Image (cartoon, rainbow, N blue to C red):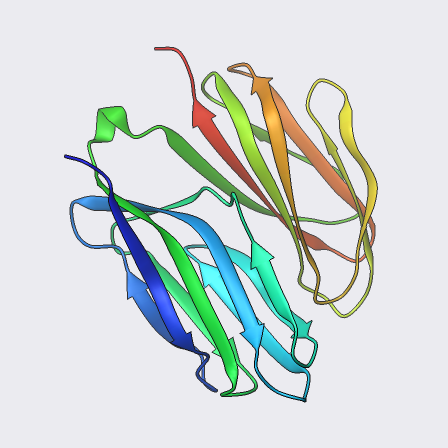
Length: 201
């Protein structure tokens, strides 16, 4: 069946944490883009959680500013949700993507969520894959400097400030089966999301 293009969210931020979309049974969804518009003369604080991934956590949207996140490609499975919160009712949100029939053997994605800190840790990848993107999201009130390694380091001391998120689209970096992705921070901890696409058999 063809992909069903959808607006998962289209409206104003609620002032309490609210689930605004749930993936239907038998489907999976891929979030492609997020747009936040603060239609106010006052700064607003917003949060957006997609599945188990914090895309934005306590990020400040300046007065009358617009934030666009494009080429996100974040998949979520049946029963997983999109949850949002905003400090102002004048803050508008659009989240778009598509739904697709879920067939276990054909599902191409893997999403790995970790919290990196000063102690190096690794996640073993059990299949040949490419990294579609990496999301670095602050979960503290301080600054994190993030390091990530494949066979060698490819993110070095990237500074993530409190309330900030950085989405790093990767140029199809290959990760072979049995390879570890290793990560740590200097300073405060940081959430890291790896979005992988399986390749080969």
